[in-house]
Image (cartoon, rainbow, N blue to C red; front, side, top):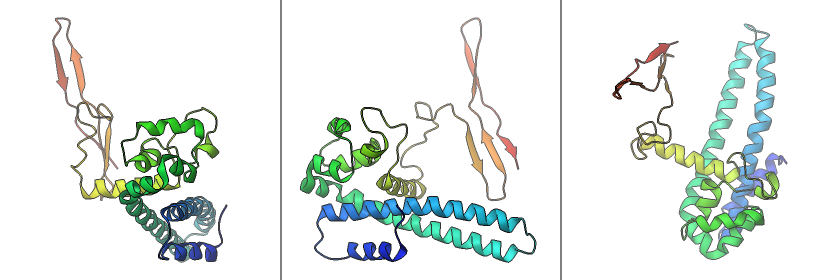
Length: 228
């Protein structure tokens, strides 16, 4: 449910109050993060409709269209910063949260279905929050995929916050996680696409391995495909 703006601001002010328990902080973080997701969905629909209407009136509506796009980008940047702030709080606090709430307590707050909680045993000590939120992606499993059906994808309010933190880390430390397209990497063999600042799109497809009848093989590297 989409909260009123005043209620949302009041919730964020509660967050800054001293003496809150970790359970309360985690509950507020989840509620705020969920609200970010709701804002994305609602504003995305509103923006698409308004944008289509204004584009039909071009060039006379260009000023209004520019303002609409600017406001939409600004709101998205604000939510991105909010998710990042939650992720930066959640990850360092994970061990402390686990010590205070226990794994079952964390599962209760994250609304994880009891039939999925056995997966928490795979988490290393003091890493239950990271595992349940991001690795296993079980947040809200009691709501979205009840019974024993596995989740078709990873999502959840806090998952998006941790994902935002991870994307920031990979941008600031491009070599820290290794090349996923390298041999033995998870994306080895997949095509790589690079969009340059001038609008040029460069696609590097996987190398071809040619096998001869005599049992020998050779690898042919493909040239990058460039388009606009």
